[in-house]
Image (cartoon, rainbow, N blue to C red; front, side, top):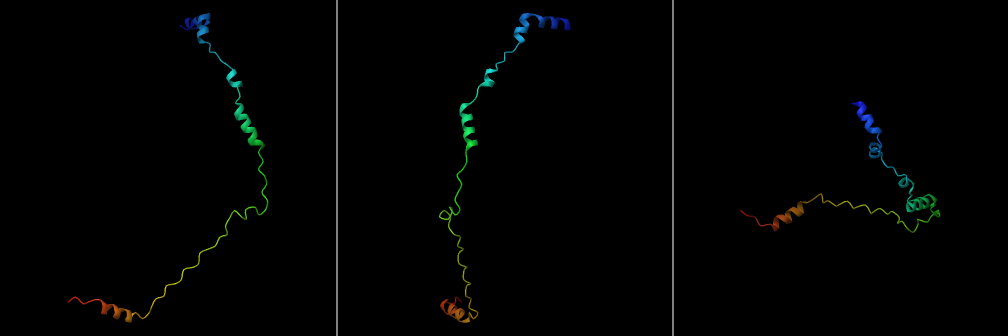
Length: 91
């Protein structure tokens, strides 16, 4: 059986169908746009900023004023008496 398989591979017809075409042209094609883009990225040098250039761009931090402590009346008997006189008694 092995002899039949190897004999069929030796025939020119079988080798032509098994042979696979390989093109090296696709590997040689270069992307010109990508090459130009990468070249410009590598050669880019940002301009140095002058010291103090950010002075007009940023606001100074000013914290809000601290809230005042609410005033509490210790003696609320007068206020309670006024409230009791306003509310009618429902007996």
